[in-house]
Length: 308
Image 1 (cartoon, rainbow, N blue to C red):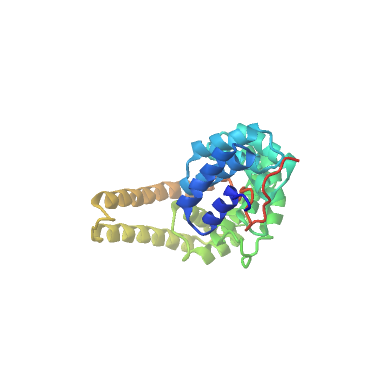
Image 2 (image 1 turned 90 degrees about the vertical axis):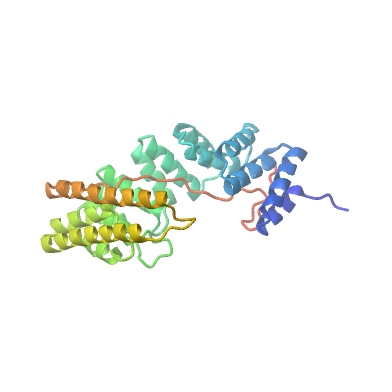
């Protein structure tokens, strides 16, 4: 008889969505042999299935201490450190990962680390190395370039976004880029395309109104203001009259009304600034990307770990 491969069995259980059984087997693998593979795989599944950042980070760090020849433990540890907002530590870990094997996700996550460390030019470079055809990594790159004052290159990249691409960021996000670059007629075009499909929020609606005013469309700007306020007031009225149940309590209702009222107040304050020429800024808050770092994952054709 061949010996049972606990790791393989654990992954098979995970693929069949038998999470509890898979978790037991991943733990068993660590008990059998506390090595790079078992520690990394248990860390990954704890993070994905239990969202336990501290336990996952502890296990991944232990795997890294074994000086693995695969980028998996370093990439996973870097991702976890980003989630923990330990950007300097994440940067060091991701640099080790990329020295072993550069991947798009590691480049993206390096971009995130550099951005939060205030190194926007380096962030732009790494986002650029990871960017897809029309995805949020490309969006991050363009936002960084705008912050750096490189609006020519930012515009060139913005014009490459394809609405029909599978990874397209969305019409409102694209409109925001055009507005920040200063091409307000293009921004208005994309804001209009997304108006009925997006939840109305003060920040992007304010930027839409700014672009309308810059495009000399004052009547439309005023009508947009009225429409936003009418929509929010209707939301408040609907919330007040909605019947309560076990999933929708009086406290839930109060919280929503407070939030909607704040949105109206924030919008009115923003409007005053916009009329004085203020350009509303949409903050860039890039987040880490996740990947599969399971040794032996057949779906992603990952081999089991072997020291080289």
